[in-house]
Length: 185
Ligand SMILES: Cc1cc2nc3c(=O)[nH]c(=O)nc-3n(C[C@H](O)[C@H](O)[C@H](O)COP(=O)(O)O)c2cc1C
Image 1 (cartoon, protein in one colour):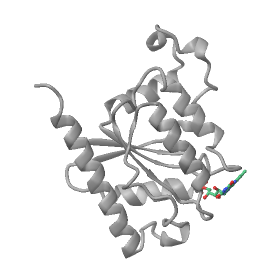
Image 2 (cartoon, protein in one colour):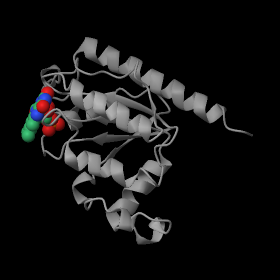
Image 3 (cartoon, protein in one colour):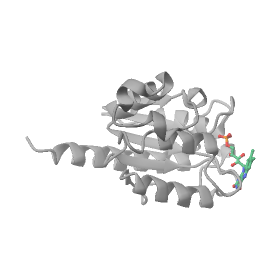
Image 4 (cartoon, rainbow, N blue to C red):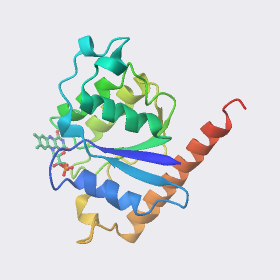
């Protein structure tokens, strides 16, 4: 199965991106993890470029985003909170895939590296992603235990955090498998 990760931060040294890297290193056998890195290339969302002929008219970086997300069986998102909300650049990326539907019914984990909890952005993301018909695995998602300081100098999580992430990844793998098995033969 292919899992795509999305960091909500554009920072070069992002703790959310580091957390996603650390999670990828803990992926169970059979789970291929691909990191989306094009967030900063996306133009501002414009519904005029998102119509029925969106595949032809969408800007190049949007086609790249949609192709990658379309191939994914599931997702892991880790995003900062800005002013109690979802960072604009990340919401912009999500807006580009509302109508094209690459997230629909696919299992999704929310991790979080926010030092102060980030519960407002987390709650907003749950609402946004459910509205987009993603299958948000809320039980397996974490709103605050993964503080950046739990990432050691080599970007590895401490033992307790690694165990929690492994459990979340197992839940994600199980949800992906259940979805694939539910497809008509
Ligand atoms: C403009 C700005 C606003 C922020 N607002 C909040 C906030 O409302 N709540 C919060 O918990 N953290 C807030 N933060 C802190 C970031 O969420 C935190 O630094 C985050 O871990 C950065 O993630 P990154 O390392 O992946 O870029 C804010 C940071 C910035 C730059």
